[in-house]
Length: 258
Length: 258
DNA sequence: TAGTGGTCTAGACCACACT
DNA sequence: GTGTGGTCTAGACCACTAT
Image (cartoon, rainbow over all chains, first blue to last red; front, side, top):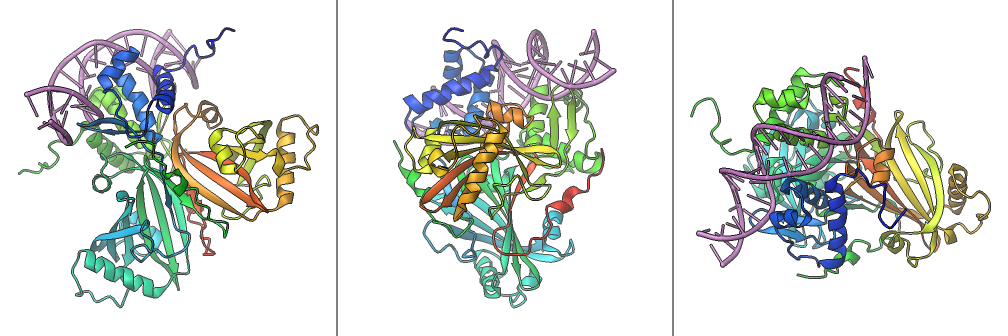
């Protein structure tokens, strides 16, 4: 056995490429730096552009790279730690500066079947649909649809405001008045729908972490939230127990270049 | 404007294909059913195979399809809800039948830099590395590396058992004796390393949900776990507050076909 | 207008799982 | 062997961004 490995006989080219590029990113590039374009890189490594792209896609999936059409490929900063709250300070627009959920829109419609099932309501019961965007460091990291059965907020006068952010705030206020007994959360991988992708400044189909939350109050489920987080830039954090809430998220903020 | 939409003028083919296939899956296929092969499907839709594959990849990412080389493409069952415990019944091999963490191996080495940082130890301090596999419904859904500084389990006699599952259990037992003050968790998207991919019966690079947990006891961080869950088949669930632990995960078990 | 990444094609060969 | 999905090529054109 010499210095080169013999076990790597049939490792896919794109996989090997990914490894090589990853190491190059660690040693030779600073965050924010622009890489050579795909045609040059492919030529440099002696592969077809499609193969090179397969490696880049993996690295982008892992949050190492950021690619923008018409611009280029840049080295991505470390993922942002985004707190997914264990406690319900949630209805407000976010107490701190860094957890801001910004209401965008509010309509009334019938919930999709999957949501209706979680809400324990009949499929065609009317719900308020509140759209919110979550900003962190000035960047939008998540888009949410919050489904609130009209029966959950009976005090809300239907003719109050027809739609828009103002109505969204009305619904959230009424929801807040009801209090909260608990919640229930799940996380899974998904791909961004066209509307979410637009809000998140990504292309449709971009990988996202879908966080589905059920909110409980009094007799049953009072609301359901489906939030899609950018999977490339976000690391979801949970402060599960009453443990020491060490920074761990903020300490990564030391950016190395522009 | 006729019956066809004019807004869809420049929607990528693979995106449109994905939509069409998705609807076909809902209406015309049962879980477990085998789809026509890629060459046939591509011909049927009048696109190149690469384009068809782009659509299939998306659907696989969303957990709708399962593809296996040499076998074919099948309709995937709904994602399995996997509880990520909020409380620490964790060191045991899993109390219930369905949360089994199975120790596989245990070695002693120096932790990777990123883990050492989370453990608040110097980079070259020795740690026990316990490898565990999580099984659900007989399927392995997650592979974990648990890093335990040797200083966290001082009572463990080094000459007890050199390695293997037996030693893994020793470490876990000692860890359990120390108790637990709390934990701290984060979830992000990653791609499976070669060794994890093998345990999870997937190809290297397959999308995974990486759950990093810090365990706290007495003076500081006592262990760090890095668990990679199959993103295609898993939905991670969190029972955040003391709320009603409704099934919600088990009710999806109604499979429709073999 | 020039340069970037995104989409798409029509092939080819390979690794793997069946039979 | 035969058939499947996985990898790879060498092109082409398109959509977008910047200048």
